[in-house]
Image (cartoon, rainbow over all chains, first blue to last red; front, side):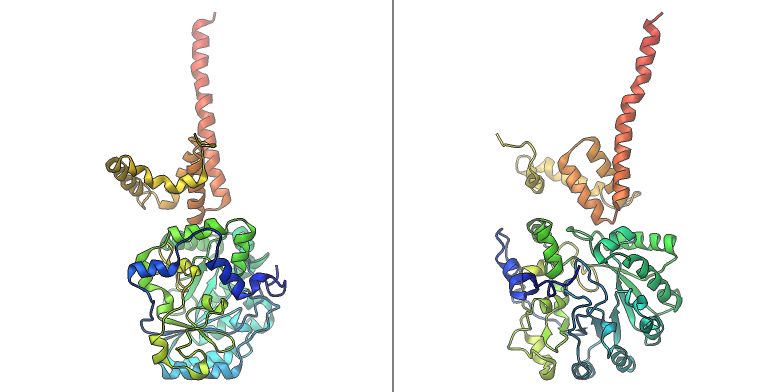
Length: 346
Length: 111
């Protein structure tokens, strides 16, 4: 498996993906019209308190469902200048949570510098760590100690407690390396009783179905990971797979695109609309452009042009008044119990 | 007459059975929902039982629905297939245990 971009796939082009989603040959009600019926259109932010920063598309893994189309061949990396601009935004705008993602954010050469700058600010810092990066190269082996030292919350994908399922989604050998990395995180105090260091896992379905009940899955994961591997973690976040990028490719190739979209639309839950993450989060791309969420970022749907579109002219007031850009992919965040980077939203 | 007795898109029309008898249909779905809620058995355990029973009653709609449901609940393929074996064992066992009845009859009517 390599990135869509390196394979010159049409799906590496955001407009091709949008066309597939918006002009599907089968008829589905538009997401915007659903919100109109509920009186939630246009969708507006509440209070912006989370800044999710995509530090680059480079990754040591090439997962089959990746919405970023990340991989070792992707060279897009956030510059020091852009990170400095992000830091100013965080300091001046009452941002309470900084969520670092990628690719593998740790592969950005300025990752540690940035975390060190955030540490004294008292903001909650999250590292969306793919786990295998910790063992991928000796220079990353001390990441658990570094993250613990700066009280960084670790959020890591582990789609199943079985090797078979995890490796099918994330690549051969990923499960074994992930278990090793989880043990290293536990060893420095993550998810240990009486310790504030948080280690949360992300579950997303290995296939074209919706996640089950988050609490039940969390209980099952805790039981199996403790029993089989002696591993502890805090919470399990269930995230619905987003029908874009490599997951969209999988849906089309497996003949499940129409049925998956129908599943998302049929599972539309009006009661989760108020809590969708784009209402309190801003997403920053590797090149400093601002998006409503990481998914809109990958579809190159920048925040609407009346708002400041780049970190160099960040204006919280304008951004708070903006209308959030919507598309058919948004159904993934409103299906069932809702889905966000922090799991269920209900 | 439809070309096929079973059409997979009919599964999503299941809730529409209330169109012909609303009161009983509503009661059925309310009871159905309670049956599968967390209780003394977990929803996950109930889903695996439902998958096994789906095979015993050989309902293609139920097999589709509970294959999806057990996967959603984090079950592995091994667990799902073990549930199907339980179903098969009971069906097979039900035939075999009647062998005793046959033996009883043979013994009664034979010299």
